[in-house]
Image 1 (cartoon, rainbow over the protein chains, first blue to last red):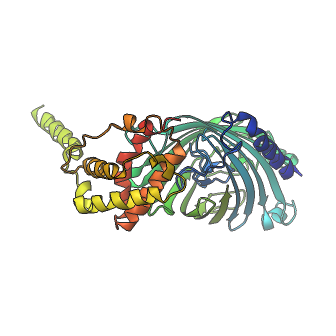
Image 2: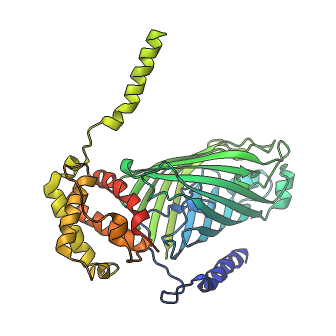
Image 3: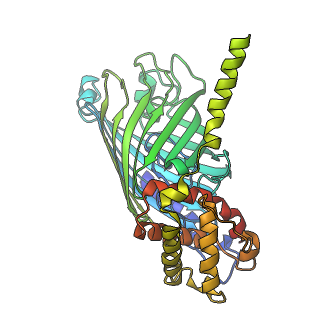
Length: 296
Length: 139
């Protein structure tokens, strides 16, 4: 139900965009797919346009400043003791504003039984995102050091408030804010991105927000680098620090090594090795990440 | 003091070196023969591309090909001096969009593939052309 609700908000917004088009001679909603391949990034684990773990300042999809782009994605993360499934949808409006929705299901598998929650106990999370490009163009501004810069937020609603409270979490709802700077060094075939996130989230929000150790926003660093081997194929890595708010479980930084293949502007596939470190009871939660993105 | 000063001077020279390094892009692309072919193939691509071919309806294509050959040579660091229209004047009144600009880029990329220019060399060339977006795209 929640997923349908989020999707219908985005669909409603999309259908209302004709009012924003001022040129009568052009299509009301112009899905122009006018940007260059791969310049929308892929879909990050929280639904925004980015790498896998970190948001990028790029607006998702291939709509230019005269058009609209829509992406849907489905991502699977398989860890030794947990599994995450997350589908989502995002809209890029006029290469300026991005609205996204992702639904996450974090399956605790046998750990749920060990914690007396039940085998396969699953946390669910709705993530509503918005991102606004402020300045710069990551692709065109090759004569300048200025990156493309965007601000964003992610509002997260977790459905397991009672469990979160039991482990020391202070809230089941929280909002992250971030500033992202992304630059394509085209002459070096290299894309780099840095984001600063203000967050109270425990394990991306899957274990709620704030905790017995800290209940304040902290600044976290999220970086990505990708080397372009061809127009369709990029390989890179990411690093993301996280807060350490809960006394019951240490939280580590996350990193990944990814390969993304852009079949065309309508379809991309990202495969990664991801290491999330310790997640409640279990160290070394590293495994496979697979994400499929389809676009308009 | 003196050794430190010398060290600093050497460091400064080392940092400045890339700026004085020989510009090899023209040679890496294959010289004027490849650039001439690249212009012909890319212009053929533009004229066959339904997204952008009408842009050239009023153009003298022979002159455009000749101007592109000199301009690409100069942009690549070759021994040419481009004296044709400046980019702002050449595109004035065409009301080109980012989608138009990017369509040209895609056709140029396809042409560079046809001319067997390696991907990383392509990107070095495109990096020098990308800022023209500011003069070319007016709507």
